[in-house]
Image (tube, rainbow, N blue to C red):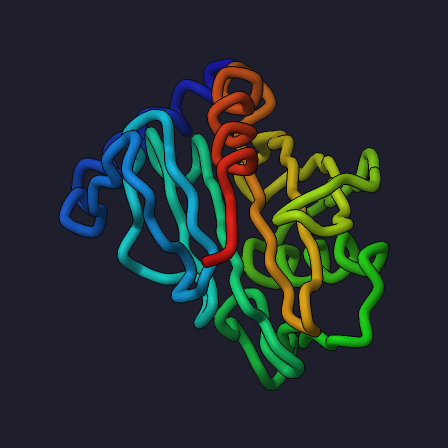
Length: 195
């Protein structure tokens, strides 16, 4: 518990020093995300982090990305990666292929996230068929353990439309934050549409 409290304090300090890197997303206003046709209407105010995790990606948070991290991916095409390269020579990011099946998306996400964040473990706990953006989609839940020794849980939903990947994911510490903000993520997913 002491380690968790120290991590929270460090996150709070990091967030306050990087406050300029956030843009307020107002509640009840439709907004486009991830430089794509993917739009949604948040029910509460969010913070958009100006530093993009990938070329077709965007990150939102409520309390700081280590405490509640929502990622949007829009219109990924053949050869695109979810995240920017960390070490292209030794650990290149996996590339999306329009020939992927929906069932391949959890592994694609896992491989990408392991390279980006250096997760010690990443366990997919469930994979279920759902509807997202009016299409057949996949929803998966996962658990990770990062280098900070904090267990995080996550949920993601993804679909492929006309050979392009659209995905939303949410990740937060298992203790307190995941359950607290899961309903906020679900609200974003429920309002997602394509223009």
